[in-house]
Structures are given as C-alpha cells and as structure tokens.
Length: 403
Image (cartoon, rainbow, N blue to C red):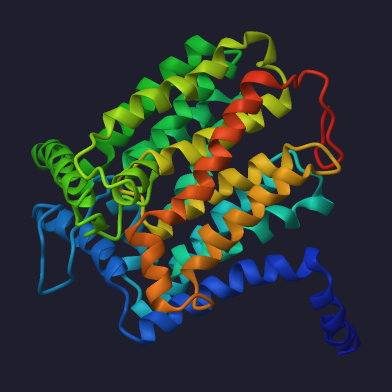
C-alpha cells in the first residue's frame, strides 16, 4: 500500500515532466479517440480491414466494393490479411483500441531505436503526437508503415540485413510506401547478402497468405491490387473548378493542381524531378558513414513518399511528420531560426489544421486545396539542400548519441 501511495503522490509531478507525460499521452489519446469513434459508429476503415481477412478466407475479391459491410474499398496487399487476422476475432470495442495501440507501440519502439539521447526522445513524440491521433481516429496503419521504414534503416546501420530486408518487404507487401527502404542498401556493408535476403523475404511474404487461401487466388489478388491502385490514383486527382473533389492527393502535385489551376498536370512532371533530387545526395559517397547524413536521408525519404503520392490524405501525414521530426533532431544546437519557423509551420498548418482547433470549413479548405502538404514540401526541399551542400562528416549534435 505504501508503494501505491508513493505512486499516487508522484502523479502530479509526472504530469509536469514532459519526458513522462508524453509517453502516457502517446498511448492513451489514440486508444481513447478510437474507442470514441467506435461508440459513434465511425470505424469504416476498420470494417474494411476486417473484410480483407474474411474475404481472403472466402476467396472473394479483396478490392471490390462491399456496400453492405462498408463504403470504399481495400487498398492494402494480401499480406495485410495476416496482420489484421487476430483482431477480427475480437469485438470491435476491444479490437479497435488494441489495434491503434499496436500502431502507437510499433512507432514508439522505432523512435526509441533512433540515436537520440533518452532525455530528448520526448521531442519526437511531441512533434508527432497530433498526427498519431489523427491516424488513430481513422484506425489507419500508417504509424506502422513509417516504423517499418525507420526499422529498415536501423538494422542496416547495425549490419543486420536479415531484419532490415524483412521490414522493407513487410512494409512493401502491406502498403507500397515501404519500398523506399530499399534505398538504405547503399549504406549496407553486406550488399550481396542484402539483395539475397530481399529476394528470400519477397518469396516468403508472397506465398504466406496462400496458407489460408490458395495460390491461384493470391496471384489473382496481386493483379487486382495493382488494378485498384491505378483506379484509385485516377480518382484521387479529381479537380473541379480548381477545387479538389477528393480528400486525397494532399501532395505537392495536388497543391499545384488545385491552387495553381492546372488540373490536368501529370504526376510524372513532379515525380521524375523529385526522384532525381531524392537520389542526388547518394552521389556524396564520402558522407555515407555520417550519422547526420543518414538521418537526414531517412527523413527526406519518409517525407518524399507522402508529398509525391496522390494517395496521401490527412491520416497519412503521421509518416511525413515523422520525417520532419527526424530532420529536426539532426539539426545543430542552438537550432537556427529558419528551422524553428519550418517546424512551426508543420505543427500549425499540417498537424493542428486537422484538429477541432480549426473550424470544419477551414479544415476542409486545407485538404481540398492540399495546403496541408505545403509545410512538409518546404522541409523536404530544405532537407535535400542540406544533404547536397552541408558538410556533415564533422557534425556534432548535443541531442544525438554519436559513437
């Protein structure tokens, strides 16, 4: 009883300590918000996820519309059926909070593996917590998607390519964003092994869903997945009178198409130059062993997959904002004013703009005109500039553990 009383007395002081408060909120807020969404009957995405498993068992098209069960359709790979499987056997009132708590936990552990001194790890949580709750309100898997990318970098750094490639392939086979983790191959000291394990895991993960279905159905499902993504890409780019007709395409392309009045601009006009800029820093071979260089490249990749995707929507920005947070911790101390300004823009116009602090009509404007993506675009360009022109080999950060 005495130890319990000591804990009770410590609670007020704990809530004044951001290093203790933020981890509590990190898990508590998503669980509460998702449970409330369930109480209100607003859990359409979760219904889609459960349908992936049940439809796989019944060998029904994973990407068709099933209006009697939910609106919209599935856009994740067949492997996702195995990820969601345990939750389909739980009542939604329990399964939904556990599902979002799992997403919170995976990203939390990925953040812990970043080389940030423990006393400063609250910075990552503080920057990302609003977008985590936004993703959790939609019961989305995006926190795990960005965690997979971070883990694929972490295990390359540790020269544990069997794990690095596993996380790349899991991320790719669930949601294609994870494929960017292949870029960390250039940092690997075991490049041949890396390629071999990629092939091995790709085969294993491709075949794995066949254990509860059939080879023919799974092969067909991958073709159906491709068709659904092509169709979704066309839908996402809808613009009428300069206004977005979709709540997606919150990207650099959507920003130009919707604000600039160029509705017919092809994604390739943006993606090809963006890809070239993303790859250019890798020509700086001497910087490969610099921790700052690697962290910034990780940050740029994580932002890249969102701002150059027509599938990006408000809950997707936990991925991009995680990249912003990683970019921020790679900066020198004291932090320069322009860096602080960019971070403030991200927090206000990307993160907080999705909350009830902004009136509903203002929140909608930020989405349909893709304004929400603008601050992250600025950070990506800043990150690429730093990668190309700043010297990082002798860079020391007070925040990071640099061995």
